[in-house]
Length: 359
Image (cartoon, rainbow, N blue to C red):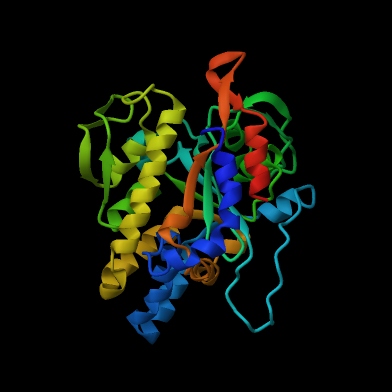
């Protein structure tokens, strides 16, 4: 990230009104698509929709983050009140969502896709999605998993707590305390309250890409990674779910072989997936619509405030005015760690300035 990246994020809001007219009519970014897809299940008919709703609602898995972490957290963001209580039934305040891609070690399918042989899990990918007030802008910040952080003490389901640790790898938070500890560690690192979290594991990600019919990506250089089992010449490729997952995990077969290089590939993949969703007319095919919704809900773990179909649909509807040009993807500023060249630490003051611009 350049030294001016944080300034660009902060300045974007100031120019929002001036550029609104120019952005009118541009293709909407597909962050809203999940909610629209779920809402579209109503086309299946009243009786079928009732069964479908209950089935999809039952697919969701949740974790009670709010109850576990209590009040020892950053404050919720202040939002501007609506002009009138009935002005808009759709939420429009700013929102912060921690999105985790978990390197799950459980289950035969996750193991086959590279999750390993033990039963543990790590947060292989972590992105903070900040939706600006009005939800017409979004900033997605990737946190390198190899960042050395101060990991706070986290509550465990047993009633015990984990020990705090300094100089711990960021992704160790999930390993020792699951999503609750991942959320608390992100909040400690950023000073920003995570309003929600969403998690998807290896097999769920691959299944979702397949349900969407694959994803088209363009690579600038050859990729040959023995660890992720992906070989791609430079150019444009249409990938199935397993190949897309391999691309998301690739680090040794391209660039400098670092986690930062992998983050670049992941960000490009996310953009490609959003484009794929936005250009796939699911509402014309009830069977495909159902398959995507069934796969998505089964693949997700959420906080308890998002663990219903109606909550996810409401989130999707609130993003109806989010356009493609208004999604910025950046990486938390980091530098090599003095103690270990294979690890990174936050680059200051740039990292703090970035998080402050999103509060």
